[in-house]
Image (cartoon, rainbow, N blue to C red; front, top):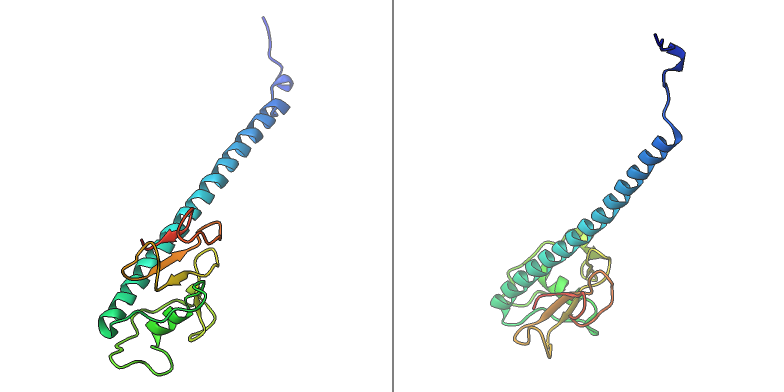
Length: 162
């Protein structure tokens, strides 16, 4: 009869088992990082679209009251005039101004009003153009440069209101 010696029982993992577990954990961690980055980027795009829609609605209310949109800056790579017009109406609000038309969080602005610029989740300025040759030619263009931060005038990965 064969007797099993208690001292010969296996009490530890082999090197191959440990390496297999480490490989599986590494693969799962890599997948998690990639998926997490994709979700973060989609969240930023959604946040940008919501900011553009809210700002566009506020600008439309401004237009209803005053018959024009807030002044733009030159060049159109900032939204300081838009932000100031919607929030304070400027140093002396025009007759008919019934604002503020929108409230911005400090995280959405660089600087303080009246010199605050509207910034997107990638820390780039939004663009505001009152006399566009394409896009919303009947009103104004408002867009973010998107994830790559390059102003493509509404093309490529830019996020627009048109």
